[in-house]
Image 1 (tube, rainbow, N blue to C red):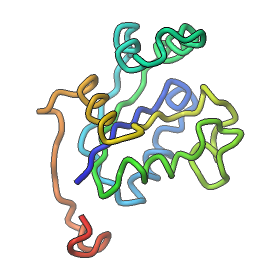
Image 2 (image 1 turned 135 degrees about the horizontal axis):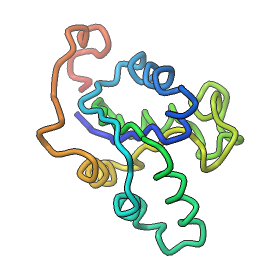
Image 3 (image 1 turned 60 degrees about the vertical axis):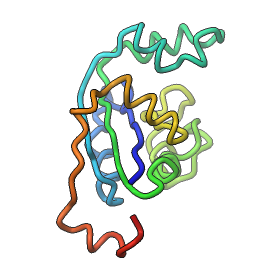
Image 4 (image 1 turned 30 degrees about the horizontal axis):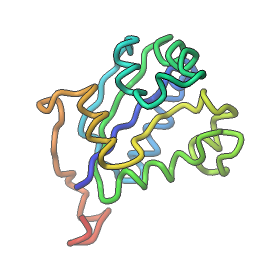
Length: 153
Protein backbone atom coordinates (compact mmCIF):
# COMPACT_ATOMS: atom_id res chain seq x y z
CA UNK A 1 0.00 0.00 0.00
CA UNK A 2 1.56 3.28 -1.14
CA UNK A 3 1.45 6.43 1.03
CA UNK A 4 1.28 10.08 0.02
CA UNK A 5 1.37 13.38 1.85
CA UNK A 6 -1.39 15.94 1.21
CA UNK A 7 -1.47 19.44 2.65
CA UNK A 8 -4.60 21.56 2.61
CA UNK A 9 -2.96 24.96 2.26
CA UNK A 10 -3.90 28.24 3.98
CA UNK A 11 -6.20 29.33 1.12
CA UNK A 12 -8.14 26.06 1.36
CA UNK A 13 -8.59 26.40 5.13
CA UNK A 14 -9.44 30.13 4.94
CA UNK A 15 -12.00 29.62 2.16
CA UNK A 16 -13.78 26.85 4.10
CA UNK A 17 -13.13 24.24 1.39
CA UNK A 18 -11.39 21.66 3.58
CA UNK A 19 -14.41 19.41 4.13
CA UNK A 20 -15.58 19.61 0.54
CA UNK A 21 -12.17 18.70 -0.86
CA UNK A 22 -11.38 16.09 1.79
CA UNK A 23 -14.65 14.34 0.94
CA UNK A 24 -13.46 13.91 -2.66
CA UNK A 25 -10.51 11.81 -1.45
CA UNK A 26 -12.85 9.88 0.82
CA UNK A 27 -15.34 9.35 -2.02
CA UNK A 28 -12.50 7.98 -4.17
CA UNK A 29 -11.87 5.31 -1.54
CA UNK A 30 -8.47 6.55 -0.42
CA UNK A 31 -7.56 5.56 3.11
CA UNK A 32 -6.84 8.44 5.52
CA UNK A 33 -4.08 7.21 7.87
CA UNK A 34 -3.05 10.49 9.54
CA UNK A 35 -4.37 14.04 9.84
CA UNK A 36 -3.53 17.15 11.86
CA UNK A 37 -3.96 20.90 11.80
CA UNK A 38 -0.76 22.85 12.28
CA UNK A 39 0.92 26.16 11.69
CA UNK A 40 3.95 25.87 9.41
CA UNK A 41 6.99 27.67 10.76
CA UNK A 42 9.59 29.30 8.50
CA UNK A 43 11.99 26.45 9.39
CA UNK A 44 9.43 23.82 8.36
CA UNK A 45 8.73 25.72 5.14
CA UNK A 46 12.44 25.73 4.31
CA UNK A 47 12.61 21.99 4.93
CA UNK A 48 9.46 21.25 2.92
CA UNK A 49 10.35 23.50 -0.01
CA UNK A 50 14.14 22.91 0.17
CA UNK A 51 14.51 22.82 -3.62
CA UNK A 52 12.95 26.30 -3.92
CA UNK A 53 14.66 28.21 -1.07
CA UNK A 54 17.21 29.91 -3.34
CA UNK A 55 14.66 30.84 -6.02
CA UNK A 56 13.36 34.42 -6.31
CA UNK A 57 9.75 33.42 -5.61
CA UNK A 58 10.56 31.61 -2.34
CA UNK A 59 10.03 34.54 0.09
CA UNK A 60 6.46 34.96 -1.16
CA UNK A 61 5.87 31.20 -0.96
CA UNK A 62 7.10 31.11 2.64
CA UNK A 63 4.96 34.12 3.56
CA UNK A 64 1.90 32.40 2.05
CA UNK A 65 2.42 28.95 3.59
CA UNK A 66 3.10 30.34 7.09
CA UNK A 67 0.23 32.87 7.04
CA UNK A 68 -2.51 30.62 8.36
CA UNK A 69 -3.03 27.07 9.65
CA UNK A 70 -2.84 24.15 7.26
CA UNK A 71 -4.11 20.59 7.54
CA UNK A 72 -1.65 17.84 6.79
CA UNK A 73 -2.80 14.35 5.87
CA UNK A 74 -1.39 11.01 4.85
CA UNK A 75 -3.43 8.86 2.50
CA UNK A 76 -2.84 5.22 1.58
CA UNK A 77 -3.93 3.31 -1.47
CA UNK A 78 -2.77 1.65 -4.66
CA UNK A 79 -0.88 4.19 -6.81
CA UNK A 80 -2.07 6.86 -4.36
CA UNK A 81 0.64 9.39 -5.32
CA UNK A 82 -0.51 9.43 -8.96
CA UNK A 83 -4.20 9.16 -8.10
CA UNK A 84 -4.11 12.19 -5.78
CA UNK A 85 -2.12 14.30 -8.25
CA UNK A 86 -4.56 13.41 -11.03
CA UNK A 87 -7.45 14.43 -8.78
CA UNK A 88 -5.77 17.79 -8.06
CA UNK A 89 -5.14 18.69 -11.70
CA UNK A 90 -2.54 21.09 -13.11
CA UNK A 91 -0.63 23.27 -10.63
CA UNK A 92 -2.33 26.44 -11.90
CA UNK A 93 -6.04 26.50 -11.27
CA UNK A 94 -6.37 28.46 -14.51
CA UNK A 95 -4.92 25.52 -16.45
CA UNK A 96 -6.45 22.68 -14.45
CA UNK A 97 -9.23 20.71 -16.13
CA UNK A 98 -12.79 21.09 -14.98
CA UNK A 99 -13.64 18.22 -12.65
CA UNK A 100 -10.26 18.33 -10.92
CA UNK A 101 -9.99 19.94 -7.49
CA UNK A 102 -7.93 22.88 -8.74
CA UNK A 103 -9.99 23.18 -11.91
CA UNK A 104 -13.17 23.44 -9.86
CA UNK A 105 -11.98 25.65 -6.99
CA UNK A 106 -8.79 27.57 -7.91
CA UNK A 107 -7.87 30.44 -10.22
CA UNK A 108 -4.23 30.82 -9.13
CA UNK A 109 -0.87 29.10 -9.45
CA UNK A 110 0.25 29.68 -5.85
CA UNK A 111 -3.13 29.67 -4.17
CA UNK A 112 -4.00 26.28 -5.57
CA UNK A 113 -5.51 24.91 -2.35
CA UNK A 114 -3.72 21.59 -1.94
CA UNK A 115 -0.15 20.30 -2.05
CA UNK A 116 0.48 16.61 -2.81
CA UNK A 117 3.70 14.63 -3.00
CA UNK A 118 5.01 14.08 -6.53
CA UNK A 119 6.67 10.70 -5.95
CA UNK A 120 6.79 7.95 -3.33
CA UNK A 121 10.24 9.26 -2.33
CA UNK A 122 9.03 12.81 -1.77
CA UNK A 123 5.99 11.42 0.06
CA UNK A 124 8.27 9.63 2.50
CA UNK A 125 10.37 12.78 3.01
CA UNK A 126 7.34 15.06 3.45
CA UNK A 127 5.52 12.67 5.77
CA UNK A 128 8.58 12.62 8.03
CA UNK A 129 8.54 16.43 8.27
CA UNK A 130 4.99 16.56 9.63
CA UNK A 131 4.29 13.19 11.27
CA UNK A 132 5.98 10.81 13.68
CA UNK A 133 5.69 7.16 12.68
CA UNK A 134 3.37 6.47 15.63
CA UNK A 135 0.93 9.07 14.25
CA UNK A 136 0.28 6.95 11.14
CA UNK A 137 -2.61 4.54 11.66
CA UNK A 138 -2.84 1.57 9.30
CA UNK A 139 -6.36 0.22 9.22
CA UNK A 140 -8.59 -1.85 6.98
CA UNK A 141 -11.97 -0.35 6.05
CA UNK A 142 -14.83 -2.79 6.41
CA UNK A 143 -16.03 -1.82 2.91
CA UNK A 144 -12.64 -2.42 1.24
CA UNK A 145 -14.04 -5.53 -0.43
CA UNK A 146 -16.42 -3.22 -2.34
CA UNK A 147 -13.82 -0.69 -3.52
CA UNK A 148 -11.00 -2.95 -4.77
CA UNK A 149 -10.91 -6.49 -6.08
CA UNK A 150 -8.70 -9.03 -4.29
CA UNK A 151 -5.08 -8.65 -5.37
CA UNK A 152 -5.41 -5.00 -6.50
CA UNK A 153 -3.76 -3.64 -3.40
